[in-house]
Image (cartoon, rainbow, N blue to C red):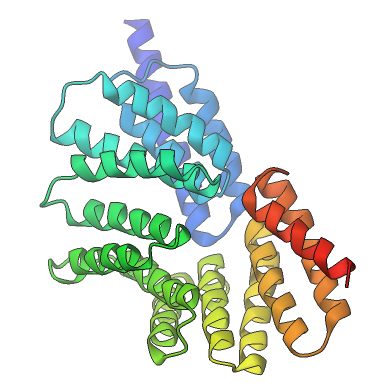
Amino acid sequence: MFERVVRRHRIKVVRRCLLRGAYCRRRGWYAEGERWARRAGEVAGQVDLTGHATLLVDLASLWHGLTRYPQAHEWARRAVESLASAPAGGGRDASLADALIRMGDIERRQARHTTAEAHLRRAFELVDEADRPRGAAVRLALGVLCKELGRYGEAETHYRGALACLERHGVDDPLARADVLHNLAGLAHARGDDGPAGEHHARAAIEIRRGVLGPRHDQVAADLAVLGAVLANQGRLAAAEETLSRALDIFVERLGADHYEVAVCQVNLAHLDDLQGRPEEAGRRYRDALRVKHLALGPDHPEVERLSALLRARSER
């Protein structure tokens, strides 16, 4: 009897910590969100979560949202292992799909694309046709993966499918819609498209997130960053630089100077510096971006290797 009471209490503590951590994440308070995530993990490690695997998925999702991918991967792995042995069915399949989506995105960010795609394809098969929000999430994750692999047609198909899930079936989730619009803008940039569609998608995402999250949220900064990249494609260098600088300021304020998104902004701003005849400033930005990516991704990640090669080539000119 006593053990059951203790177990119920600890599960409640995990839930409270997850709720508080998720709230802090939505507000952009990363340090406080991470504190609650660590507390949730400490308590979750002390209790048998059989029958409560969704808490493992929620914990993985919280770490994922905080961009702490090793921790997210560990809890997602535990969730997958716990759910894989449970009887198949709606609740189990939905939770397992969530865990696999997290696993797939984490593997993608670590450049393990084959494994990432296997997780996401498995999640896609598990999602019920009537589950529109989850259907949008797995399509969006597959679209991002295909874009990174240069499979732009497939990426657009997945993005459009995600948008259809949200728009044609009455799903009221403006932030999910903003996610899709953001990625459609990113696809336009990846393709080198200088037409108006990418800018339209990016500005629509900014408007949605500013209304929901406020003007200084890191997700707003992410939309500003993709808008800046699209404007650069259009040759509007001054506007691109101003937009990317605003994004960089928010990222540094909200996430700190050593965050991965800061490095992405620095690379894009360095490119603009080169185009506008400021090679020394470009070099400084590239070096800082390399330092941050090395910290965030490790020395053997393809992004780190490409940026190192670029800097070596610059030094040999």
